[in-house]
Amino acid sequence: MVQIRKLASEIMGSYIISIASKTSPKQLKKLLESQLDALKSSGNYRERQSYLVICQSVLQANRDLFKLAYAPQLELHFRNERITCVRQLLAQICVESSRTSPCL
Image (cartoon, rainbow, N blue to C red):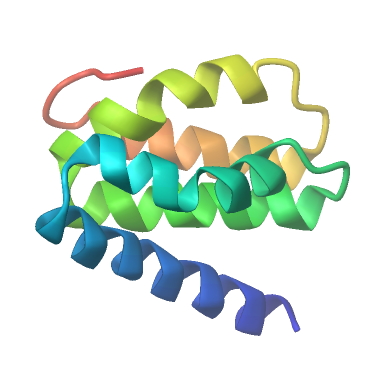
C-alpha cells in the first residue's frame, strides 16, 4: 500500500513538470493549489509524506521550479513536524536540494 502511494506521488510530480512546461508557474499554482494544500496540511502523516515525495520528484526533474514553488513552503509547513519518517524525507530533500545550491 505504501509503495503504491509513493508511486502515485512520483507520477503526480512528473505530471506537475509536464504542466509547468506548458504553462506559467502562476497558472500551475492555480491548477494544483487545492490538492497540494490539502496534502501538506493534512492530519494524516501519510498524506504529508506523499506531498514530500511530490516535492522530491519535482526537485529531481526541475530544480528551478522547486525553488520557485516548493522550497519556501517546506519550511513554513514542516518546521514543527513530529513524525520521524516525514522528518527523514524532509532531510533527504534538504540534502538533495543543497548539493548544487542551497535553496532551503
